[in-house]
Length: 466
Image (cartoon, rainbow, N blue to C red; front, side):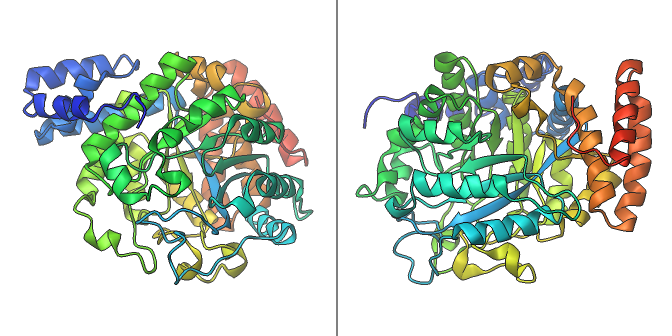
């Protein structure tokens, strides 16, 4: 394998060398973290080995503080939209793997894409994450056709449209990334799955494209070369030691900063979940407990404070509820992940057509009402993408604590749309009360502008933003 920025011996040495951090060391690290400039690998290694429960409470409090300082109380919502599950790879943990005879293979037609998107729009969604398997028959041409169809789909009752599409798909070469760039996609996600090269080789057969560790590791470097300046990293926690994976994410972010000048737009931390006819979940020694999951999420917020952090419906509602206060800034809602699953909404899971099991199957309205009741501002904002606040421009805002200056007003405006167009009476009631409080909290200049735009939305205008 060619030389990369991931050196397992170095990561394991850091974990071993910081096995018993003392209180003074942790307090110094937390003081550094409060500066919201991120942490270095030795500091993160020490936090990963922290055992003192009182100090962990300090970590959790600081994670919440940093998230509020950078992004405010808004939490962005999106819908995952699985478009195809044909796959040429044979990853040991995945329900889509090519050797899985229990998987029912489907790739949505353009008409089916339109139907699924229209159903999502009728619940209030404005942001999609379109997900694709890796298969030569369903490459970038298929992706481009289905993305274009999703963007073009509109409903008239009342105001349905998708304003931004992010992508989770296999690594591509630069020319293919440029095709997607021309379609005005948002963020491109490629998760390394596991950053440990040896474990990666065990789980991904060498005969497949995904078996090339380095090709996948540098996927987002190529995306940035093609002009996709919002990219997203992540690991599938449960494939290897979670502490190693957290440091792998950090090294990935640091290398992007060094070589590209900008780190990841978002970080994801999905946990391994069961999939049909896929025994690895029951065999792996690396499953992450709820307690350790809380810790890793909080550490990620401290180590890369400028990133968005995505928590998905893989997790149960009760745990998601807790995680909002540990630094999470984006979640999905009203989720179905079986291919064609939004047309079969009553089926919470369709095992033969999905990659893994999900545990939060509540409606979008229910998820939004919970956020409001917890005093968060649900947001469907896509303003930064359309105002050219992406890549380095967005990171400069986030790193200087100014992202919330536009994030919170835009959250208010998009929530107002949802309450008028899609919300249940109870959600509208609690939402209107939240918006009244939020508008009063704004400074004089923003108060005047937001109040004016809210009245315009009430009069029928849509898609207003800062």
